[in-house]
Amino acid sequence: MMESVRYGAQNAYAECQYQFNKRRWNCTLIDPVSLTLISEVMMREGTRESAFVHAVSAAGVAYRVTRDCARGLNERCGCDQSAVNSDPKVRNYDYQGCSDNVQYGIAISREFVDAAERGKNASQRSILNLHNNRAGRQVRIFCYLFLISNYQNLFR
Image (tube, rainbow, N blue to C red; front, side):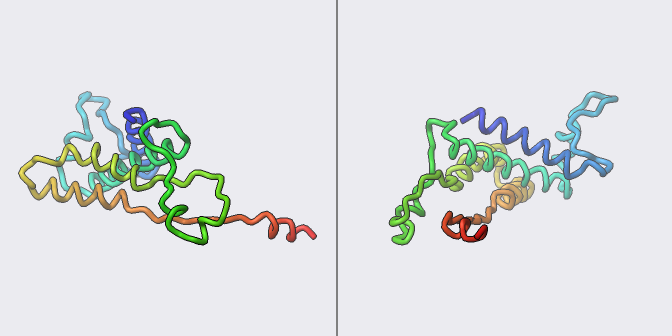
């Protein structure tokens, strides 16, 4: 699980650099002149950039944990069976895939990413950071169903 969290954080950092690549601050972490951690100083301020970093970090960890669970790379989690077990239409369909266990990914993201903000006497900054973390974990799930019989009819 720790490997998924670590890769999720790396994905978040890469996404941050991509999103800010044309900006003055491009998500760099270390000042090459003074060798100080820019992110540590920047993250103490209530800026748009720090809000984005919190959101994308929470999203990156949730995404990577969810993806690794669906691929069977974590022993502590697996596919999400809730939709298959609850909907009678889906139960009759012989589904061979692995649904993303998004709720598990969100729970792990909450456990790891929010840990730094918990226990800080609920300061305004920690409340704001927790809000930004939650914003990053908001997910929209889209489902695409491809039916082979319809696909074959396209080429007739």
